[in-house]
Length: 169
Picture 1 (cartoon, rainbow, N blue to C red):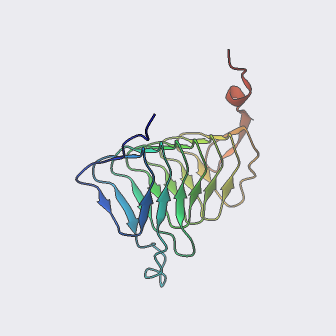
Picture 2: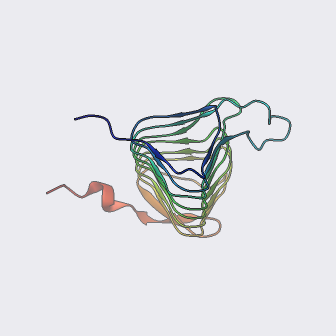
Picture 3: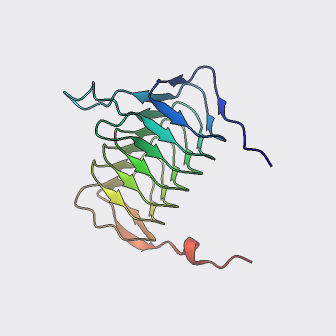
């Protein structure tokens, strides 16, 4: 079986510093690899790396890293109007819902789901398997633990994300 085709909509703007693996889909009006929005560091464009199986639906902005690559892992799903700032790392299987904004240097753990219009402060690390509620604000003071659910402004722990512990039949 051969590798899956990469599909890039003709209206997407992909900068030269972007590496895209096979099997990626990039929808209309995305901007990927633009210089980092970091005052005084706009010329330090390290690039973006997007791994296989990722779907970027449309109107998504992914900025180039300033200190290292901005990385989008395998099988991620980024919905419309989401913003991934410079130097972010999304591990495998991450879902970013519509309108989500991630500040610079945010790291999102595997199989994490961030709900519509949530905002994450720069330099925050979200552990594996978390679920962040719609409209939640993750500040640098939010204490986050693996496989937990958070909601509110500022976000607070609301329970465990059991979906990752259900045995496969």
